[in-house]
Image (cartoon, rainbow, N blue to C red; front, side):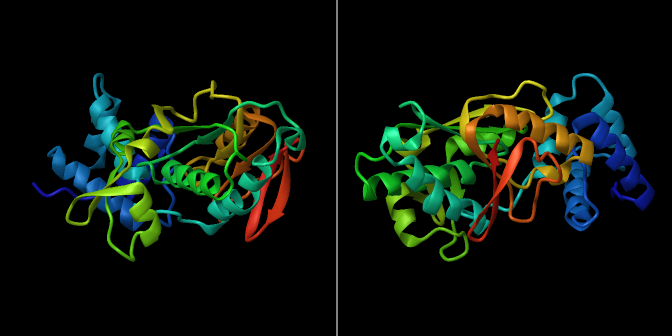
Amino acid sequence: MTAEITQPDYESFRLFLHDACGILLGAASQKQVRRRLLRILGDHGLAGLPELADRLAGPGRNALREQVIDLLTRAESRWFTDELAFRFIAEQWLPAQGLPTQARNHVDRPLAIWSAACCTGEEPYGVAMLIEEFREAHPGRLADVTIVATDVAKGLLDTARQGEYDLMTGEDGLSAARRAAFFSQTGPDRWQVSPELRARVGFRKLNLREQSLPAGFDLVLCRNVLRYFTANVRQDLLTRVHRSLNPGGYLVLASTEAISGLTDLYEPVQCSPGIVYRKK
């Protein structure tokens, strides 16, 4: 049996998936999404999207739901993507936090960072690398840092906790120096994040549509997430993320994303090469 996806079925499934899982499939990524949906249909011997929707709506289908969420929200595995986020952290945020306590204008406590949609872990591990590099360059200038990383997909989190990746030299965004400092080779083109760096990141499952989000963060990275949600859901999420930030904390979105409205909650801050948002 060869599965097929008609345009009407695709549009109906888009609406179903948004209502059932909170995922909004964009039109721009339809070719990639279709390819991934065909893989799911083939894996489960399903004739089309209506049958998949019936399966997802039925009881006891958590494993299938996890697979659908995993595949449809999975990004390409690359390190230090989006220059905005990592340059801001390395060049502006970390140096400011690394000042003596009295100059930071907050109590001497561990700093807290939240990677709100961590996928397979490249983002929080990348942040942990920047922190280690800062500490090496500025001994004694940075307090303890807690990194919390969350995602809605269990399969992605399992990969992140393992911290083992296919790394192709020159194609993965990692410098040779970082590969040598923070990874060990486990096979041909296969590398694992060091135990020390893995221990610095705490992973947990979380659906961002839940009303209760973790709180007490100085920095929140919520990149390439808003595109999956409708405008109303995006505004609700950004309002709740505001409550997750400590006073003066920063929210970093992808360089292609921006906050519309909510001027009473966030102050845009110009940095090179883009804009981040500070809690008012």
